[in-house]
Length: 137
Image 1 (tube, rainbow, N blue to C red):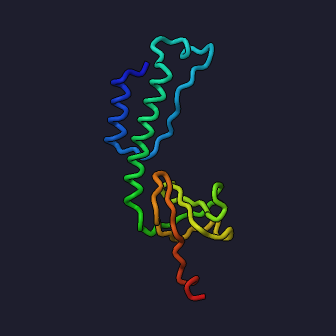
Image 2: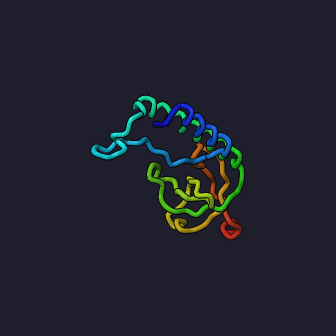
Image 3: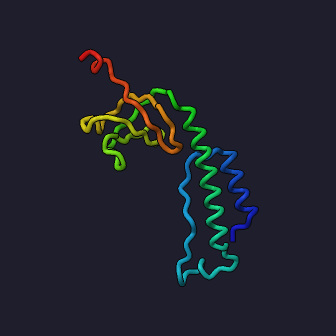
């Protein structure tokens, strides 16, 4: 039963608050449920179009927010080997954003200083900054 006005209000809130992440899902009717029998069901093509617009808006805000951090040196907790590129490790900033860096398996579970070199919208690419101890070897 979401109206175009309801959806416009949602987009307005996203823009005003500047949500840079959202866990959104398309409603899926379940047979024999009260919700599936309700009147004013929104057509599937409308739902998909609205979902796409909402996702684009959040992604653009995320891109703008993340771009501001490129060049900064931050602390990153390295968590695991990257699933798409085995030459990279994946870690997280204190705000839970992902960062991918070149590193060694021994660094997993440690907090390292990283220069954020590139923003990819929802994650960063970075370069580990060697500590003073590593520089003296």
